[in-house]
Image (spheres, helix red, strand yellow):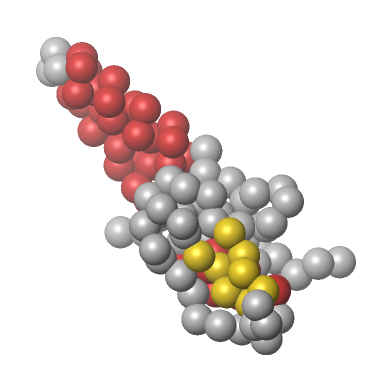
Length: 107
C-alpha cells in the first residue's frame, strides 16, 4: 500500500463504519484521513512531515542530513541539501506531480 492510497482507504472504511453505526470510530478514521491527505511539503524546507507527524529538520555540519527530533529517524549524509531533501521526501512517500519520486528541482 502506498502513502497516496492510505487516505483513500481510510475514507472508505470511515464511510462504511458510519453506515454501520460506529460513529466514534468513523470520526477517528476521518480525522486520520484529513491528517494524511493534507500532508504537504513545508514551504520553507521543501520537506514532507515525518511519518510520526513531526516536522523534519536539516543538519549541515559539514554534510547534509535530514532528521526527526521526535522519533530519531534520519537520512544518510549527502554532499548537497537537495540530495538530502530528495532522499527524505522519497522515504516519506512523496511523489511529484510529474510522477517522479523525490524533491522537485529548483527553477
